[in-house]
Image 1 (cartoon, rainbow, N blue to C red):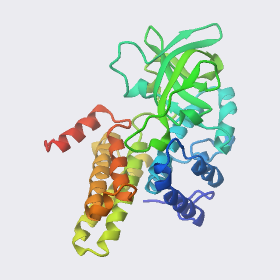
Image 2 (cartoon, rainbow, N blue to C red):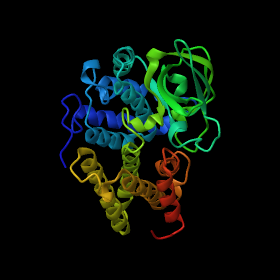
Image 3 (cartoon, one colour):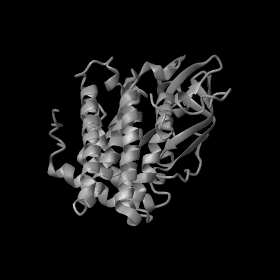
Length: 367
């Protein structure tokens, strides 16, 4: 497997290792702090060029390949899952703005996002996996003379209270949808108090309310078309980002087991088996993202990798708790935090086939 070789921040460089250490040192404190999103950590990302990973060079970024980006996510998640999750939401917004055809919109947002002067996030789960069962759309759109009028609720918006821009979608009565870059300073935009979550509460994820919000045509990213998310602008729900974070969490859990195995030889077989699975998943993600394997090979499909990554995150975190015994069950210990964080992958962008695979595994039902 080839290695990351960006001159600004090599994954083998002292600057990169310093960043990972700083993130890891703060992750426990971050997860113990109420109503705080990782602003300090994003300042570090701005200093080291991480905020430019998904932004084209003409706007100040470095535009990494998919393979490099997901390896970076995996390593960052091994240091701090919460901060890395928030980064993926910000990057999802940046990628969709960068992928649109409207130069004015890109010039407005991308340079400031790259430099860390602005923060963006996404609110698109109601177009993909959340609230699809409702008769009325979560966010309704109507055409106006100058653009669109939006009403409704955007669910599951990460760090909305800190966002200058939310990339979100809305649906017309005829079923067509638009994807827009919503300026949160617009009248009618309000954020509910963030949810208290099982884990990652510091991501400040919550609802955003839209009451007669007027959005100009210049804010349009894509549409109006049926199923706007299937256009694949700036990536899609089938990417390996979520799997990369799950494998990153597994790295940390496996390292906890490794520490215990130094004193307990009986853990070596457990450690080696889990770590072999982790290394194989890292390899498969790299090959899949690099286009070095047949895209129709089910073994390298995003769904297969996601199922395996979810399973590894759950099993490795519980193995770490078991290995650390009572100490790991104390609030604030890395093992108990990892167990809670691993649960996140059962609900975050979890398509039905992935959820069903998890349920079959829990019920010990063979494929």
